[in-house]
Image (cartoon, rainbow, N blue to C red):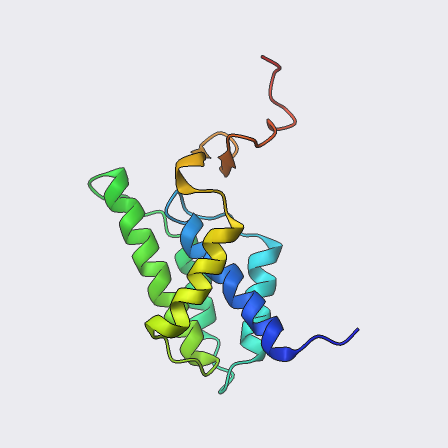
Length: 140
């Protein structure tokens, strides 16, 4: 089976946009899917510079605390969106409303609505109302 290179890049960028959406809840844990998306995007980079991809990776883990949870959420999302724009430029896509909006729309469709997501500090994961309990959780 042959997959179009543009489709592969689009899938990687949509996953990175999903990360931008999810980081508003809490800093992200390193995942294989995030590493893969960054590696795929890096393979499309025009100059081979790793800096935008490393910056995106580091920003997902940024857990600096500010004056409020709302402010923290805003700053995490804004900073990671800035890093996504750097990744887009590195692969030859100029970040404009016309190029960013389809990525963010696809990411939002893939995730449950924000009001249904919550961060569980015990498992360090974002969960939904329909998420199964962690394997070590006691039955209610």
